[in-house]
Length: 389
Image 1: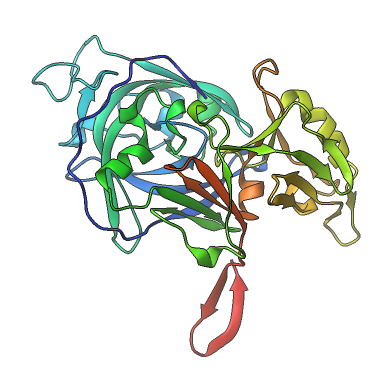
Image 2: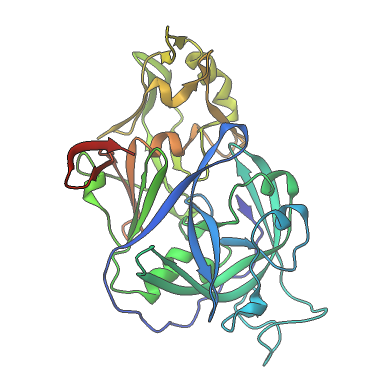
């Protein structure tokens, strides 16, 4: 994603909210086009009657982007839209954080105001851009049990969205969880604002994806979701904004398919359903993975695909990268200029269903641990009946 260049600002220190309870947001796996899948959860915007939307918690973007109620494009109409006019806490702002009009909370009629264009490259759904205005409002996350944590930030309310990309998205908007480098200003960075308004929370979050559901943990982690202790790695180029780690090599069984002589990087991208591969390496890896063979009775046979990070190797089984009667490789192409990027891989659902991912905002590091099996125990009479979900 490449946002337009606009001035940054430092918002006034908010009133702190006390309480150190771990915040858990439940995620649901939903289906998109081309057999893609995404994990989405609920958030609410505004007061006194919060507007609830389903969003993708996107580790590779830097803004909260939702359709504005004034947007009439086909893509906007397909999704639930956010109306600042239904919120008593909404304020139209420019990129410097100041109101569009003094002593007027919301602007009506024609007005000169800052607009931002945000471009997206999505490994599963393609490319597109959104034009948005900025609205400062309350944003709340919580669980079905009623515990909520709120903050306030500058929301990108889209007044125009490219139909090809955004109409295909099976969710209303995106809540960016990248580092600050991918945002147009500090007032837009959700996790930074969450930590500022909730100083007792540990400045970390974690992701756990299951077959049909998942969780995102704010302010800590759930060790029951991990089969082993976390292994931590420094974030590469943290000022760029991506949560990315260095890859030493990529192997398919005993075959090295990318020696990473010029360096390789793995970007954690929850918006990617398939394994993302930079375009100039795409065909070579696809050809190597095409040697997987169908088995009698269904399924595929093939070696593990490994990404060597040093202290841990992230391993994908054949069913993670190949599917169908012909065991077709499931990859997404990343159209990145090889002059600026080398050996980029996007770790999306395929990796995150195998590994718990932890993100440390303060220390700028990423942790991985193999996931523990998800089990549900059914009542006293079925104490021995355990199912993986």
